[in-house]
Every structure is written in C-alpha cells, then in structure tokens.
Length: 489
Image 1 (spheres, rainbow, N blue to C red):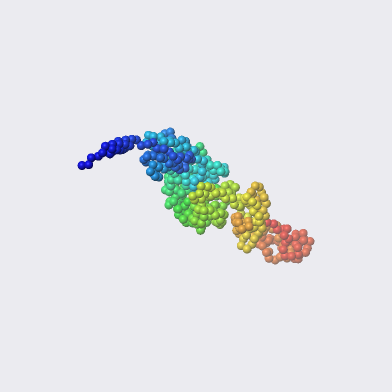
Image 2: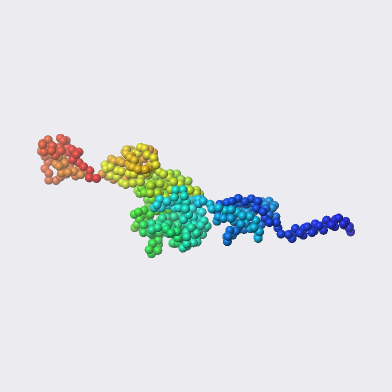
C-alpha cells in the first residue's frame, strides 16, 4: 500500500472542506441584467443572471403572476411576461426580491377590428379581437366593454370590467345602449349607463339586430335566423338560410340577411315571407342600410364592397381585402373592417343621398354626396344617353336634375363611375280639355289618335278654317295645338 505525502493529504482535506461549503451554501441572489419598461398588454422580456434556474413571480399589491423562464446559457436566463395593469411590478425568486419592472398604461388601440356600426350620433362602435368594444370618434378610442380577457363574466356590473371573449358582432338598440354577440354563444346588452347583462344564449350566433319595437333578431351558423320577442321572449325561427353572417333591419320592418353560403342577400318581410333581393353575391358576410335607401354588403369571397338597390341591382363601390363588416353613416360615408387589420377603413364615394323614382317627362331631382364635384353626369338606358344637370347644394352635396324621355331603369354615371339607378315610371296618359277635343273635330278628324280625345256627343264639323275652329285652336292640320295639351303629373 502506497502512503500519501503530507502535502497530498492537506490538499485533499482542503478540497473536501471547500466542496462541502459550496454544496451546503444557499444559491447566490439573482441579478437582473436587462430590464426595459413596457406598456400594458405588450410582452416584456428581461435577462437575469443566476447560478441555477430560478422560479420567478411578479407582484403588484395583491396581484401576482408567474414569469416564464428560459435558459439562454449557463448562468443566464430569459424572463417573459405580459402585464395587464400599469405600475411597478416587483420580481421575486423564492423569497428574494431582485428587481422591478416599470409598466405604463398603453394607449387604446385596435388590434383586429371585427365589426363596426354607426350610432345615431355619428360615432362608431367597434368590436375588437382583443375582447373589447370601443367607441370611435374621429381618431379617439373610448373603452365601452371588455377587460381584455376571454370568457363570460361581469353580469350586473360595469361593462368595462366584464369579460366578453370573442365579440364578433354589435348592434345599436333603438331603446338605448347596444348589444353584442360573443363567445359563439351569448347575446349581451350594455345599457346607456354602462351596465352589462346577458340577454339570451344561442347556438353559434353570428349576427344580431334590433327592430323598432326592440325585438331581437339573431342569425345562427346552422340554425337560420331567429326573432326573439321583446315582450314575451318567444322565439320564431326562419329557415332557408345557409350559414348567414349579417343582419340589418329597414324602417319598414324588412330584415335583410347576408345568406353567406347561398351567395344571396335575402329579405324577411314584416309578414314573415322570405324573398331574394340579390343573387350571385360571392359569400356576403355583412349587410348595412344606407341613407339613400340602398343596401350595402361585404363580398368576402371576392374582396369587394357592394351597393345594392332596392330592386336588386348590385354595383361594386370599392375593393377591400377580406372585408368582415360594413356600416354606412348618415352622410353616405362607408365604414369597413377587414380581416386581421387593426383599423376601420373609411370610404368616401359619390352616392345618391336622396334617391327616389321618377316619371317620364317630369323633372327628377336627386342629391349626390361627393367630396369633389362629380364633373359630367349622364343617365343611360340601353343606347340612349341623357344629360343630367349638376348644381352645388351645400358642403359635399350636389343637386342632380334630369327629365327622362321614357320609362325604364336609368343608370347614373359620373365619368365611368356608377352612382346608382333611377327607376322611371311611364308618363301619365295625356289629359285633354274639352276645347281641344272640339278643335280636333273641327279640323275634320274622324278617328282620334288617342282614346282620351274621343268626346261622345260632339258632332263632327263640316270644315276647318271657320272662326269658331280658329278660336278653339284649329291650325289647319289634323292635330290640335300643343298649348291645349298638358301633363297631369
């Protein structure tokens, strides 16, 4: 057996003592080597130096949350967290506090706007994928509902503290406040004082609307369209729809439906009958009513915004990348939200704000809303083109005037842009006074060219040219003077 020297024995003893001291000693206090301030809702990333992997929590008052830790290299670890409340959050590893994170309140912003509607005051209500609902006035956002967390909480309390996970649709309640569809299940109502309540539950609701009586209309993904009576709560179901995604109620009580997978815009009359307004629309997923009496629709399948007349004629007014909703203001401005875009797009297009039918031979007037003077406006029916007079009638408003020579559907055009369609009814029958009929017979007419010229009991004259005939309007031909004919319209 080999004996160790004294020096070797001493070195081994020292090593044993040192190793035992290190093993039994507590780990060194972590040190935060990288720390930047962050705003609420954004991801914070920091770097900590520690001898071994720490378990980190962040505390603010009574609030506490876990901080994710990832190893970068020996002795260095990355920290990650998202803070929902502003303040100075303390970082703790076990019982050791090793740093703070300054979190400031982030300005309100849209992350992925899903639906937009126009309030009577002209402001916009916008639902966002961040599980919140905002009011947009100009460029200023105000939080109306949602605490930014998924779920369904807060009934009977302030809407801003409630959880409204996945709010896909909004609708203004004419009685006050507004309703939302969220979580693919619930319909909730926020009153004018900001209190939120659950109204009903449906199977995958996709849209909602209120009529003038406060009755609730809801479209379900697979269940058609349903009407919930405001007084009794009774539910009426309307079929013939294939995954509808948009609703709008007109002043006369007609409910327009974006029948998405039937590629139609359909209407439910106050009597309950379902009719097709426009066919061949490529996956419409929202509808809105404009002040001009037209229906506006998003065409998701073709990435377009359409304007549809009450007779079903669809016109493209703008292109839009994957539009998700559409709304129209009282001034004719069109508002659109697009998929995965944190903004509301505003489209100002020339549009007919006062749209009414015309009668052939009678002056027709309409109001055009346009930021600039539209230039030359014409009306076209087939190969016939009719000039339309344009006169300024106020800020961004122009008065149109035309006399259409015959009935039909006249397309209004500003250069190559389509403004709308004017339905022209036939002119009324030409009315004649009794002296005109007498003059016709005094001129020797035997067969009246128009039935209304026939006046039984008046004997035919012997000749034309007598003083009596001239006083009655005889011109020597077989036609009465034009001044004796008048239009009753």
